[in-house]
Length: 99
Image (cartoon, rainbow, N blue to C red; front, side):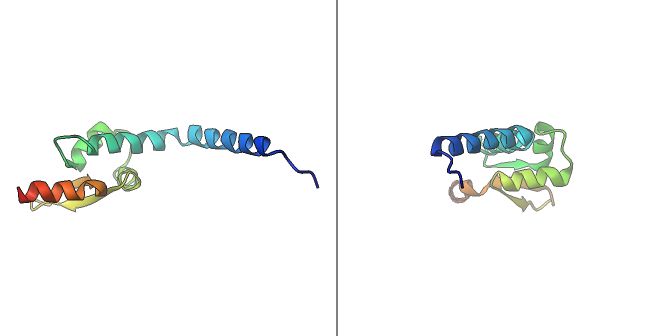
């Protein structure tokens, strides 16, 4: 049984990872873009409608999956509109609600 040197194995893994990133580039970039809009300094929440306009090219359910992978949660307002916020910003949201 041949033993491959460690650098060959890690080089192969790095190459495979790069290939996967390229293959799923749209998904990675969509998640990154969603995080960007949901991380805006002034807004903890974004309406689904706004996110659809900013992240075009996805069906409603595809976009919802992207938002969940980006770390967002969905909330509904009193008017039944759909809004999203990063789970990591919940403390900030609560502090703003109290103030």
